[in-house]
Amino acid sequence: MILYPAIDLKDGQCVRLLRGEMSEATVFNDDPAAQAAAFVAAGCEWLHLVDLNGAFAGAPVNGAAVEAILATVNVPCQLGGGIRDMAGIEAWLGKGLARVILGTVAVENPDLVREAARAFPGQVAVGLDARGGKVATRGWAEETELTVTDLARAFEDAGIAAIIYTDIDRDGAMGGPNVAATADLARAVQLPVIASGGVASLADLVALRDTGVIAGAISGRALYDGAIDLGQALTALKA
Image (cartoon, rainbow, N blue to C red; front, side):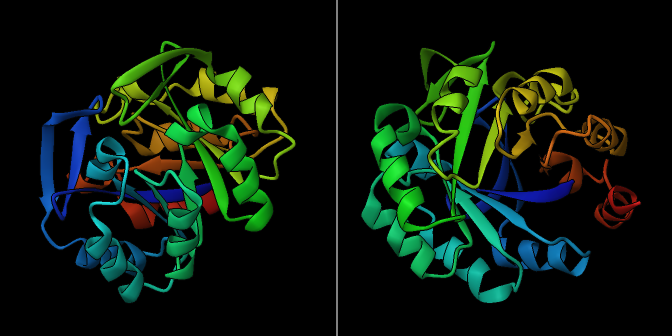
């Protein structure tokens, strides 16, 4: 199972939100590139980047910070938040991103996801963010009646690289991930599923790994707070 340290970007800074509320942002580092370098120095193999402002604006806002990270580190990075057209997908992949994450457009324009996955094999992931099992879009501000499983299944034949499943109610709350729901999703689809939201301890990571079906986990606040030692976690997950 791959551990993805998260760098959530708001106004050019590394922050963590509480349950997706922009008003509940805690700043952890005002130099995102330096934070990325620290994660890589600890041994991470991937980085997970989110343009929080972009998710609400519908277009990239923290592009300069993302480009600084890409110029600093030599590990693959995936980015979500505000990427909603083919031009944006092409531009970011052209700048060195390994993978773009499409969330809102997966609901509003699923044909774009399919087109992008065909054009860029292995470089397009779908981000499914949910409250109570129902998908939310536009920076989690709008809720839909779509279930996570139904939407994930709709992309099984699209050629996407992974599903990133976030339980919004657990995100940033340090209360533990929704292991059961994530594992259920992973068993329901023939796609790699990456868990996000609520990872608060090494025990949480081990619980996700021990399901045997979850391909990756994203952690942010626990790494910044020191609740998880990144080097120790990476070693444990390889054991």
